[in-house]
Length: 246
Image (cartoon, rainbow, N blue to C red; front, top):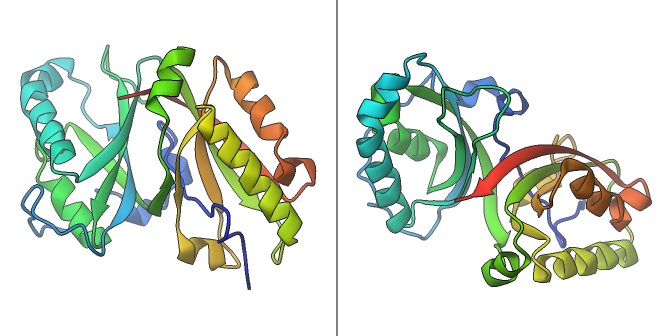
């Protein structure tokens, strides 16, 4: 069956929303194989959403290891292993002291390799946090940094969509695609990923996801409500605060 492969069958990354991800992908059941940071080819890699949950109640433990944690994340970013990180300093749950909730995308050739990379990090080795891993496919649309900076919008909201029918009319797909691209060019939405296998699965729980830059959750919802898929009752969505792009 054909789903919305031609538009944006996208998967999901949301901060502080671990209940949306399968438990079996958690770091509580880690793969103990090691992987050298940055030692991987860009060919054949896919993206995985990484959602962190604090497991320690000791802010001093985090403070002590913070330099090492930061250095490792920066190294992964410089080596093109992680991208598109968000942090939320105002999260209402899963918060430890003044430390922000953080989530990002990790690039790896398999879920085992993704786990192996994460399991070598200080934050995991020291029992500071555990993670949930979700495959999200490939990046379709990134972010219009200059446009977004000019608008001065700092908060992002991740929207998780589910379609309710297959074999959508081409006119609807084209109109949805056109409006998504217009929003992206305006800096209103960003970081859209798609997973071809996920979009073709009849029982897929998530069909596409994107981040909305808005001043409030209500504003983000108004943007989503105006899209053709919502207007024509083709898809419904949930929205979660993601915080600030890092």
